[in-house]
Structure formats: structure tokens, C-alpha cells
Length: 313
Image (cartoon, rainbow, N blue to C red; front, side, top):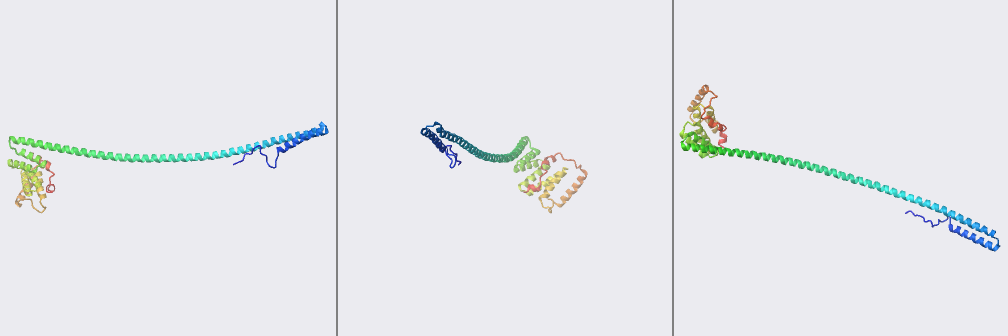
């Protein structure tokens, strides 16, 4: 710590005001004594003049010394101010640097938080989009399933109405076509035993109804009665051929062939097969390939996809 000198303090080896005051006092005392002893007032003024001179010198020295001390104090104060100003400047610089660092860290933190928030929002957006897409897919599947169920239900209702209409027709008079149509409805609804019963009743009323033989053969195949299935399909093929429906003939005949191994002949005697093939060749030469039998063909168009592979699993 810098020591601030007190004006009352006397520097060692320098001007001493007390000494000069003592000399001034001695001069005044000496002048007074000389005046009294000699009785000469003029002689007493000399010491008095010397005392006044000493006093003036002392005052002058005091003023100079005070001025020097004030200058020294001023310089010290200026130095202290400069030191405080330097400390304050250093503190301000340090404060500015710390503030700048804190602001930079805060800005970096905000940037990181904003980037993290943006990434989270993007991730959540993608997840929401995926969930929305999944929900739409599920909704579409549900709608499709509902539509399929609705169509299936409508189909079932249609078949039930068809069966009811056929039953009403049969109440008035037995009709082969009514039995056949009701048999088709039973078959579509999975009631195979009732389908066989109605097909049998239709055949009993109309032995030329090739479609009834064909469909009963298909149902027999589904029930595992392969022998009866082949007999019905063979009879259906003959009837289709006799009626000129060559497409249905080929379908019924091929279904029998698929049922057996490729090496097995078509059910029936070789002579019957030869006659059928010869007749078929002749018929194909004379018949219009675009002509269709209006009675049997429409009844079997919906069963065109039946094969042995899906009958005898």
C-alpha cells in the first residue's frame, strides 16, 4: 500500500520550520535585550530585523514545502487513479470476455436445443406419417374386408332368395330346372349333401340335364366319392357332346382325365372312346364353332375354373 505523507511530518535531513521559528524568536529576544542593555533602540532593531527575516524565510520554506507535498500527493492520487482505472479496465475487459463467452455458450446451447427439437419434430413427424400410413392401410384393408363380407353376405342372401324361389316353384309342380338351380345354391353355400339331393331329383325328372350330372360329379369329388364322380362326369360329357356343346364336353372329359394318371385311359371301353372321338371329329367339321347350346352352357359358365387339382385335395 502506498503511504500518503502527512503535511505535519518533517522529512529527515531537510528543511526544519521549528528551527527557523526558534531562530526568529531568539532574534526578537536578542533585539529586546540589546535595546534594554544599550539603551539604543536602533541597535535593537537589528536583531528584530534578523528575526523578521528568519520568519519570512520560514514562511516561504513552509509554502514551498507545502506545495511540494501537494504536488506529491496529487501525483500519488493521479497514480492511484491510473492504477484503479487500469484495474477497472482489466475488470471490464474480463467482464466483457466472460459475458461474451457466456453469450456464446448460451447461443450454442440454444442452437443445440433447437437442432434437437427440430430432429425430434422430424422424427415424430415421420412416425406420425408412418402411423397414418399404417392406419390408412388398416382402414383400407378393413374397408376391403367389410366390402368382401358385404358381398359374401349379399351373395348368401341372393342364394337364399334363389333357394326360396325355387322351393316356391317346386311346391306347385316338380321342375328339373328348379331342383338344379336350388342344387347350385346349396353347392355355393357349402351344403353338399343337399346339393347332391337336388341334382339327383333334377336328373330323375330330366335325364338329359348334362349340367346336373356335371355339378353332381363335382360335388361327389369334393365328398371323396371318386368313382361316382367319374361316372357322373363321363355321363355329362356324353350329354354335352350329344347336345352339341363341345366346350363343356371337353371340360367334363378333361376333368376326368386330370382325375386319373396320364397313363390311365378315359373311363369306359376303348370302343366307346373311339366312337366318341370319331363323332367329335365329324361334329367339329360340320358345327359352327361359335354356336352354343342355350340350355346347358349358361348353367356351367360359372364352374369353368373347376379342375381336379382343387377338387381332390
